[in-house]
Length: 422
Image (cartoon, rainbow, N blue to C red):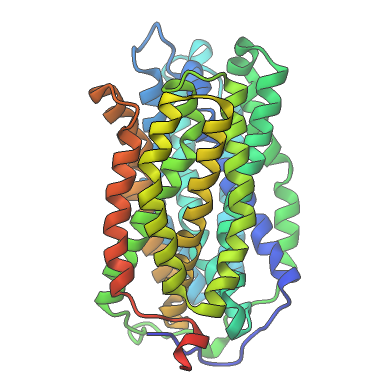
């Protein structure tokens, strides 16, 4: 099931492919910031005097960004297989820059009425399209630029930089919430958080433009002669990605959950996000190194099983004792364990795909899983919490998703080169 790449290979030092991580971090920063400021964005575009469900409408708009992710995955991902990884990454990054600038500068409902949420939704659709096309080409690039025995470390950069985005977004939110009062945060503070991402977009474009291409002419499959991907891999990949996606977005929701369900202040809630990002950034690379040394499956299974037995006790502790120590500790533990599942999951799937269709197939699988489960996760758990009145709803939803993920991990084949030699 491990793929064999054709043609010559462009091997790059790890420090040079950090440029991919920079662009990836900026894109995910923009995307997750919307989730972290869901309450403030709800006040801006769905005011209480117009709707009783501002937060739900805000989360639904966050979910709208996932609708176009499969389309972006297919179009930009296949573009990465036909033309090259680098042009595809440049395209997705540029589109994200346009969309995030639009979100940051869209006037409020009070200023332009119904046009405000309509514009917001349109920009979210562009954001989703761009991000849907980012993961496939960039992860394919990381696999192709890596020495065979270090693919785990290189691809772990994908998750590390996503989690770095969570950390930076948490720091920005923490600073803003401690500097501004609630009125200023609703009025312009959340916009400032988005503009932080906009300000560094030129850096990402310059850095990505300097990278060499990893897709050679001999690697491109002519139309009608594309490599086939086994259906077994497609289904198992979708299940693993769905499980990892739900885990990631439930844990990313901790900022809103801490405010809405645990009634913590905004600044303390953003502190939990900072903890989550910091722990994940430190753990992601370690999980990649470990998967290179002992295999992808052992690392995934250990992480997901330990997470399953930890989730419910962590949420029970947070609900019963919603102190800083308990909430931050539970957040750190769950994100620590999730990193050992999520990063090797992406490595396994990417490593299994033929090079000629790697970008498009991975982008489509990832985007479909994200669109179906990532976009709905936060809306679902908020709705379940409202319907049941139980703040433990996220724990039960996450546990169910992880149990299904275990089945797929057991069935998938090992892809780490060091394990295949024995």
